[in-house]
Length: 72
Picture 1: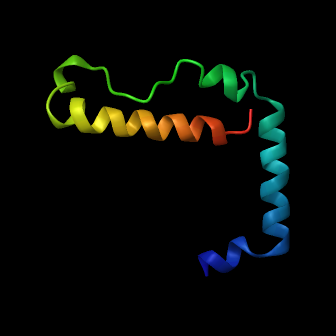
Picture 2: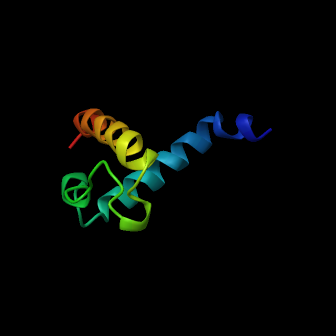
């Protein structure tokens, strides 16, 4: 029933209207909001071992790709 609810025409229309109203109230663009993001964890107690040598490089590569896919 939950899936069916979202495929009703009036539900989608109502959701899109709410989204447009919320988007109109935004004060920061995606570029401004995500300007300080980086693809790594720099919290020193966690920055060792597997995270340092495997996790952070993988997250950095992922963020490199995703940043280019985001519509600014």
